[in-house]
Length: 144
Image 1 (cartoon, rainbow, N blue to C red):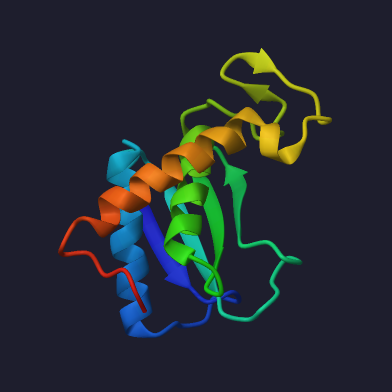
Image 2: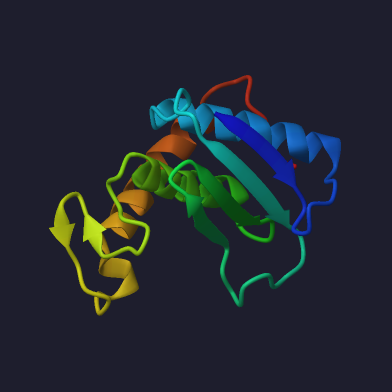
């Protein structure tokens, strides 16, 4: 797994933030059992108040092995990062189709309420567990 961490336009971010994001991604990837996959994940950190409306995070599938994850700093960015990495796992393992119409071999139509989409329910469920595990590990930075 390759990880790149930048600002929204590919710019540099403060070193302490870069290290914290890199450590969190590595930890979450191990929890999700995706750290050994041949994937490339580009994490873009957003410090401005709006990058996609009021969105706090976003996982974009470039192709089956390349992902772009946007994370906002004005919220609990560690929780958002964990949530979006669950989506990386879902796409990389083929659990969720890239057009988001198939979930674990079941067809879904586009009229499911966002909060009821099974992939979002799984991401919300796992992000809490992942964040708790991460923050309970004494070597991990949690605040920037």
